[in-house]
Length: 193
Image 1 (spheres, rainbow, N blue to C red):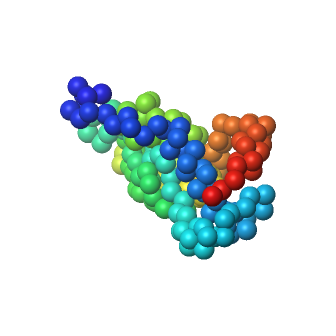
Image 2 (image 1 turned 120 degrees about the vertical axis):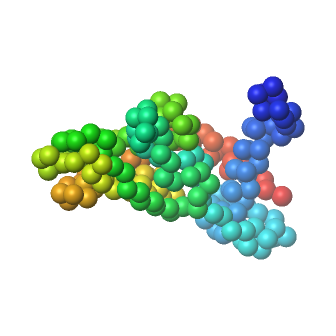
Image 3 (image 1 turned 45 degrees about the horizontal axis):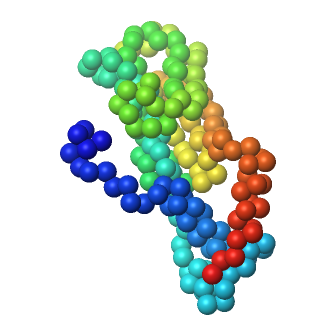
């Protein structure tokens, strides 16, 4: 990494410890607010924890796969940059690259790598039945919305004929219900001081 970036990597914080501490602080905030009734918080910390503002943000950028206007090479167009306060929505107008297109496929990506194939495909929506003989560069509006519950909404609108498509994509954590319950039991067993 040092050869590539020119900077020495900082390995002082253990990532697992950072995540664990963040989870413990978040659990303490919930307990202080009475949201998590299984946990108790020392009286001396109660008010301090209640006064902390918790702001939901997205950890990764969201965008769509598009073709570069000049080279026609695939690329990623980021609509929602990472670390945006949630809920957040963004619309942008794109243009068809082929004359007479009868459908538009919008692939929703997580990540910001310029190459769309290096990002994670979350889902897609198709707008079909476009008006015949659409000109090249006909406008298509794409709107992405991301809420704090991990739900991504995508809408694509053919601005010439008014056809549109909409889809909801639910982000899953990757943990099973048993994993979540096991971790919750562990957190409940901790005493917050």
